[in-house]
Length: 312
Ligand SMILES: O=P(O)(O)OC[C@H]1O[C@](O)(COP(=O)(O)O)[C@@H](O)[C@@H]1O
Ligand SMILES: [Mg+2]
Ligand SMILES: [Mg+2]
Image (cartoon, rainbow, N blue to C red):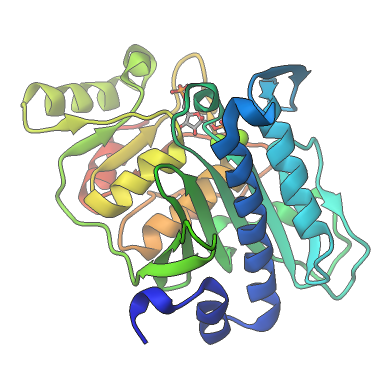
């Protein structure tokens, strides 16, 4: 059997237990539906902003809400899921299933400011064990190293599903003919030493001064390239394949940081660390609320260590 004939379902049957596989397949099916809306763009009526503001205080895009509804619909019927939490929901949605094993936290549409201009966006997910206690928002307040799986789907020129299980990161690519996710990259590992910085440097004057100075030195050396799509999934996908470092640090006007710990930084950090990169101490952080924001640095181990040492 060639690598490209291994479907996601087949691979999951070999590498995970049945209930976790069913959750991951539900997420894959949701992403296929989201991809259809994205591909149709203005033809589907799915673009543009709504008047709503979400719990983050951010104006929702029409596609934020549609992608959230699609994820909810696909996950709600799965008996293995005790509760879900989303960027677009104020609180966790709890199902009355005392024996369910998993919690799923997700960012249904990452990089939504890019959707109206036809630039890559994604869906991010994190799967945690469901505690044996009563389930509410606090059940999700587990540190990132407790994740049993995490991943993202990147809706770019190709639709790719990246999946991390403890010890391995693999990539599936959607076959344009069938829509089926097929294994295309086994055991991804971040190439070390690449001199690529992925950051919104328009914020540099508000970063911690030592961090801003280190980045400036790197840029002044002429040895570094810079890449910023503005969708974390797209920027991280480049780093996973080509190396480099991603940062969205705390800054004077955002002392907590911008990116959300539970459904953005923890899953991305889990993927990066299982691909031999580093996400500094993100996965050790004990969350205090569902929509908590944090500063985030991830990618090449050496670069992350240097930048984290300068980020206080
Ligand atoms: O607008 P900025 O400062 O470039 O921020 C971009 C960052 O914000 C995000 O778009 C936040 O994600 P959402 O679209 O899910 O809110 C990240 O994907 C990205 O890294
Ligand atoms: Mg996001
Ligand atoms: Mg989002």
